[in-house]
Length: 148
Length: 226
Image (cartoon, rainbow over all chains, first blue to last red):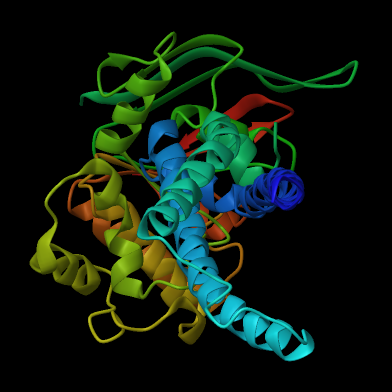
């Protein structure tokens, strides 16, 4: 029994490591995408500054958009996990000759809440640098399409 | 007549690597309240640099600038934003409209940042002023160049500025549409707005009250027509 618990513990540690790496990679992916988006919208930000937006207004806009996108991603991801894990469970059970009768997958409301909150927090963290960068643009540089 | 823009000894130096580009060299500029001023000159003469400094979009390397009685030199970014928001409306050559917003929403955009209460009536009034009362619900892609510029002018007007600054507003328009846009500027000027317009078109520029000619970063001539 101890050996099985050890094996399960090792598998869990491995899984958590993979998740952590995936999260770090996706965080960099989000930052990179946001920076590209900010760069492409430089002129737009310049125009907004010319018509009365402050650096704080622009930063706030980038942050709100980031949190909206990441939290929408969090919701879609959670739904995909619920649907996808049921499909995978069915596939795995079909492949295994002796599989448990009960469900292999369990969802706890706490875990779902954590995933959703985490997606918002990740959005906030990832949006900080692009928001700061876009807020620092001077209107002239921005209208010319230049980036600091 | 009260001076609304007063610039003395403005200089602007851009650095490109080790090279220094002197865009403005000791420029004195003055516009009175309700005046229609044009700035002409060849490419690279410093017209846009001057307009951007007057509009607080850029800071001068040297010299002094007063806008509506307020000293601009040395102001912090926050104060510059407020000064720009309360006093100036911008019109650009490329219109710079948001393609996903309708004409009405584009005009409304500055109110988001100024937190002024616009209301549907005010936007309708501006749409009427720029002659687009029937086109308010169209996207920029569904409008002609002249109409897009009218939307941009409407957007510049929504915060009730004292000054309209336009950088080559007819640069992307044909001659007939350019004339119509200039007529609109004249109309706004008659209502008391101060207009500073940068243009390449000397014929249109002569329709103003005062015309500055810039060359090599210096004001060469200042002609007064009326």
